[in-house]
Each structure stands twice: as structure tokens, then as C-alpha cells.
Length: 376
Image: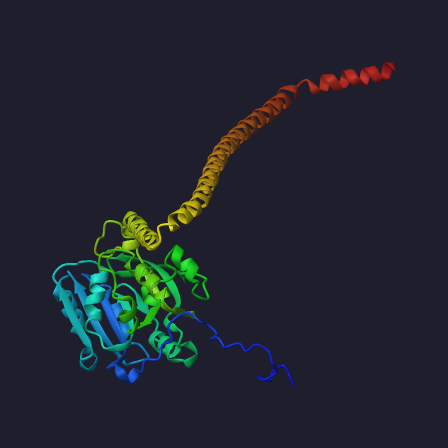
């Protein structure tokens, strides 16, 4: 009787799935009107909206539906951009005008309500896709090997640019991160990816709910956390999207929320973390002790980090101070070298003067030397 024989008297063990936790997604594309539904959020950006719209219409996958949500902006801006869109493409575009901007998540939800698609993507008016984004991401989620994934993320190119009088000037471009997979534990720490590189199954909305309209910033991170809590997030290690950054301080029309509203992001981040911790404690009040113990270690680490930062600042100050002294000494050496050159020039002139003054006396000295030699 071999060890693989089920009747060998050994204790039978039931098979476990490879990844036993998370939802197994099996929705059929025939249940939806389109493959991909896109929500494009915009507000008074006539220079950027055409570029974002072109990155959608240039997709190699043509089975998409687009809802442009104009949250509180001038309607004429959107209408003017759409006037240049091909008529066949225009039939797949719907526009929603919100009278006031209630935040990006309210705009996202306004678009979601009008979509009937298997997959959903949220696109901001200042970001862009590479042409194969939709084709590659939908193929990933369609793959039977990825039924555990409720969403997929691609690598993202972060592009720094400046709005000028003649258009948009590219300053720099590089990968947003070196990640090659989504680490959920790191996602809990901070948002590891951006909405422009994210595609998710529309069925997720029925499980985790829509975007949180109470959050005017970092609502994408809140949504990503809720996605990661119920399903795997796949990853395509190739840049297929671009996140455009501008630090145009004072230009409210074209600034990024992350660069122009850092304090607001930090405050909202703390509020979200606090709400999640309170929910965790409400489920079991005894968890407070665990959090206090963990927070103590965290606080000690923070203090150590603060101390290191203080030492770094001190080293920087001393280095700067030493650098200033070295610069002063260098300037003194240069001045001394200049003065030395003047002295050398004076000595040379003095020697020449002595040579000229001593010329008439040279025959007398020569005769005296000759007389001394004869006497010797």
C-alpha cells in the first residue's frame, strides 16, 4: 500500500485553496452594457481636459463608456472641448454638471451611478493613460488565474510639469515607485498607488460601498483600503499611466491637491486613522490595551527618529559653519597670494633699480679686485 493510497489508514486531510481568504470573482461580461466604465472628474481646466480626454479616446480597447463629471466648473469649458470630439465617440460620452464642488469623491459617485460596466476606472482631468492601459488591465482581470483579484494596478510614471503662457512644459518624469506587487500591510501605512493606475471590478461597489463623500481629500486611499480588506489587488509591473504634478502655487485652477493642500491631507489622514482605530476598539474594548502597548513602541521609535533628525540638523549646521570658515580661509589665502605677488613685483623692481644704480661703480670694483690679485 503506497502513501498516496487514500485507504492506507492515514488521517485524511481536506484540500485548501491556494489563497483561502478573499472573494472569488466570477461575474460575466455579458451581464453589463460595456466592458469598462470611466469617470472623468474635471473643473475649469480647459488646457488639461483635452489631453485627458485624448488619452481615453486613444485607447486600444474601444469597449468603454465615459461619464464626465464637471463638479462646480464652467459648463462652457466642457462643451467647448467636446465640440472637437468625433461624433461616433461622442455617443459614448455622458456629461454630468454639478452646481457646486462637493469634493472629488462626490464627483466619483455621481459618475458611478450612471455606469453599467464590468470594470470601473476613475480618471482625473490632469492625468493620462498610455494607449494600452485598458486593454492590459482588463486582460489581467479576465484571466482565470486572477479571479482572486478584485482590482489591478499598473506602475505609474510621475511627471512634473509647469503651465506656461504657451502651454505645458515638461520638467521631469520617473517611476512613481519601484513596487512590483501590492503589499497590503504597506498600503495600510500610506497610499501605495494612485487612481489613474487603478482598475476595479464594478461588483466591488456592492461589497464595500461607494466612495466616501465625507472625505474631500485622500478618499482614494480610503477606497483602496476597503478594497484590500476584501480582495487581492493585482499588479502589472509596467508603466501604463501618468500622474501629472504641478506646483503652481497660487494658481488655483491648475494646482494639485497634494502639493497645494499638504496640511489638509495630513489632518484628514489623522482623522481617518482615528476613525478606524475607534471602530477597532468598539468591536472589543480590551483591544485598547494592545493599541496602547503598540503605540508606546511606536512613540519611542518616533522620539528616536526625532533625535536622529535633530542630530542631522546639528551636523548640517556644523558642516555649514565649517564650510563658511573654510571659505573665509580660502578668501584670506587668495588675498595673501595677491599681496605676495605685489611684494614679489616690488622686489623685482628694487633689484632692477640696484642693478642700474650699481653699473657706474662696476669698473672701480673690477680694478680693485685685479689690484688685490696682483699683490697676492
